[in-house]
Length: 331
Image (cartoon, rainbow, N blue to C red):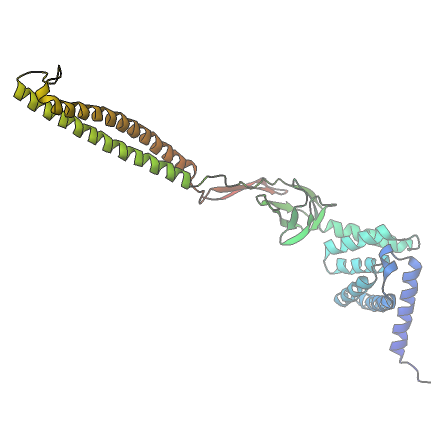
């Protein structure tokens, strides 16, 4: 019978030991649905990660543990992944995996291992910062930098690297909110985003004002024309009356129904009546047209589209040595 090489036997033995330890420690509820063969493969990756970790090859160990955890997210794998991330300076990831591992750890977890994980978690938290973010709009997508960290309300604080962070949110129908935060290592800060609804365009536009202004201008023009016609009728009546006075020698040649001048006197009376009618209509249209034109101008001013609206935002700046606001805007 052909014998396996020593390194193969060693790897198989390590995988068997790893699988046994994983099963003995009790897996989290999510591992109960692992696909057939995933547990064995996860055990192999876990054993290989342990070898790399013991040899201080942390990048390799990180890759092995990450692959194993994707197949079997157990306390043992998550804990070792967190320890490796701590060595690589991935403090937020380390804290997440170590915290989850401790929360789901069974009583079978060795006390020394548990204490080591607790100490490592404390170290990870001391080298990172946490932001407790609240937003006044439920369901709003929350970002830290360019990364989406969840939707409001967030269940827990967000871990960030110490230093400068930008927290933002912009749900549909609201103006964007943004807060700049300075946080020290080991510090927890509260960040509040208060979003304001977007202003709706309630302008009525130019059309109503233009129509009313046009009608007013037309009324003024027609009124002016009627006044001019009234003036013409008055002039004709005056000329005819002057001629009759000259011919008759009387100051009021049309009084008493004088027969010789009856037709011409009727023309004078008709011209005077037309004058009065046109004068009244012209004055009314002129005044009404002027009022309409004024109303049209007002409607044009009120209904003008909002272009280049001044937009101003006030962004809080929070930090251990500075607290203030940043004013930004476009005009």
